Image (tube, rainbow over all chains, first blue to last red; front, side, top):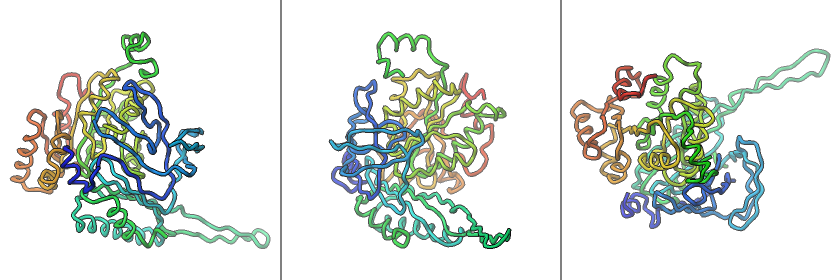
Length: 211
Length: 227
């Protein structure tokens, strides 16, 4: 894609940089060397705070403040110490999936937004609410002159649980606790709007579930 | 790993000569929402065939961008073990990581097939070139999925991008053929041909079962698809 087209589609002056606007912990990258002679984020990592200059000819810069610790849970189950923008971080390599959270960044010409939230109610009612949020976000992107790549979500019903209690003898009181709601993750990839616009759209659409 | 041995080093050369069991790679590209995952599920099932117990015959490498991944959960829910690379696109930001992972998959699982589902914003040709520079494969092919229903709108908005995505694709699935009438489908195919004159264009509807005859057409080259 030509720069002009990318900028036009993205609506940002420098759409080839990845700029992160988020409010939650990130998974860190582990720099290592490859044949191509430069560093890449490695493993099940979300690369941030580093810069790539690779064969694709794009500069991909993840700009973010690294003045805080990042706790991350990944499957590899080991610990990494690393340096990130001259700050030392110690982090667990796991996904934290902080809830609720909203993050938005650019990838080349695409604007990528992610939302994690909990929606209460029965499974069906919570799904309806999630669909409404997604439809509102999608409509708002188009109203803002943007183009939708996709707005996707994955919803998982919160585990059914039960309270058990004995107050006398073997008489067990059981109370099922179910239909608490869903845990939802939504991924939006759009074009032609700025990160700020998409972030505002997502915050507005999911406002009820981001508090 | 090749990079640990150092490209061009004696160890690297030795490993290249000895080789590992070479796998066949399919890079599945196409724009966001085109139906890559739906199509891939059917393709993987076709390639696995009756040998369901041969778990490592097909390995799927999923690439997603963003803080949350969706497709890998869908694939995992269908019984596949999925390796996901996300938060970076393997055609650029995580190209080195991709090479490492492809090599690791070949070394660990020795699959017959590797299907790499690219992000909807990736350029499959770049991915292929990146991998083939460092990993020895039996074959590497690019399959792209185009959304018949949205084709003209997307082409209008992002023509250069669409052209680059389809560049040198061996097979182009024109998906969601049911969403358009026959005449429009024909126009979509002609329009796709503007960007890729040599690939096979195959109209499909990936939400419905795709017949084996279609897959045989896709894999009809000698040595391919003998699942």
